[in-house]
Structures are given as structure tokens and as C-alpha cells.
Image 1 (spheres, chains in turn green, yellow):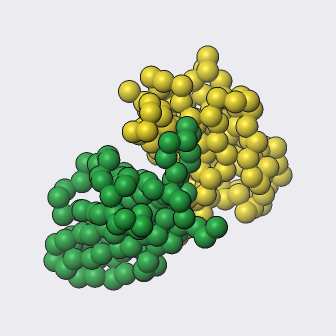
Image 2 (image 1 turned 135 degrees about the vertical axis):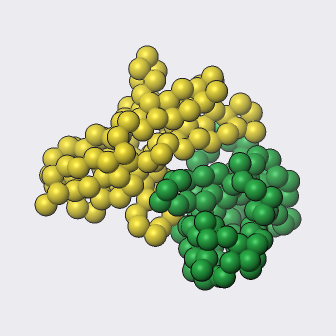
Length: 114
Length: 115
């Protein structure tokens, strides 16, 4: 099985712009989660989608949004970019309904805001 | 409420010596516990998981962890460190109350291997 695929791998944007990141989960996985990772704050949960519905949400401003499509692929959007949004954004998928199913991570999208 | 505490932010060991990365958790339910490893600029890779079967769990690359309910601990060990083990390690707890379980990450432990 192919793993979790995130595109693009690297992005450079300017303050005030918006950006869309994409995540393709492992085939059969219906849950997709997004995380932001920075040296200062560590790994922070953004949101989780399951069957096209947001199931859990972290403590991030409304500039951060996401969606999930019927094929379970997910996108994350950040509007009005700030310098502090520079981070590694990680996507993870897992099957649900199975107790203790682990998250499977992609290699992330490195976003740099200048 | 569930939580995870990784007791050391940095651990340094010499190559060939044992590794111990400590993790304590709290959970209202019977938790599932995981250890992940992250190499620079990569995603997190699952090392091992505990889901209420055997309390001693063996993972990849020679790592293992023991679930101790009385101590609410899930420490990660390896008998002999290798240079390639240098990375950041995350302890994770999942409460799994039905389908809407929350997953909580520890803050990570950076493992340094000295030659």
C-alpha cells in the first residue's frame, strides 16, 4: 500500500498570501488529521476529518481551515499568512472503528513565510 | 482527562549503550499507547504500540516498551544504541472511547548518540 502523500513538499509564500496543502491518505483510511510542527511550540493538533466532516479541532485561529473530499483526500488552507505560520505541516491518516489504530504520517509540507 | 508527559526533553547516550526514554500518561479509560520516531524533516514513523494485549511490546529497530499500569508509565528502551537512532521520539496516548477518541502527543525527547 502506498503511504500518506503530502504535496507540495516545500512552499515559500509571502505574508498576506494564502496557501493550500494537500494530503492523500492511505487507501481505506477515512480519518485525516493535520498537525503543525515548529521548534518553539512542538507538535500541535490542527483538526481531524472523518467522512468529510470535521470531528475534532485544535486551538488555531479561523485563518486555518480544512476540508475532506469523498475519496478521503484532504486539503488544508491558511489565509492571510503570517511569519509565525512558517512550520512543518504534517498530515496523518488512520482507519477508524478499530481500537488503537495508530496514525500514519506523511513526510510533511515545509512552509516558509517571508 | 488524558495527558502524556515525556520526562526528558533531551537524552544523550554513547553508541552501544542502552537507551531509556521515559513516558508517563494519565487516562480515564483503558488507553492505547504509541511511540513514534521522527528524523529531521521527515514525518513521524510508528515504532510500536500497546493496545491491552501483552504489556511488553516489541517494535522496529530493536526498540521495546513496557506498559506498567500501576506506575502509569510506558518507557521506551533499546539495549544498544546506534548512531542512526539519533532522532526525536514522541510518546502518544489514545483514549479510544468509541470512535471519537482523542490522540495526545508528548512534547518529545531528542535522543543524541555520542560516538
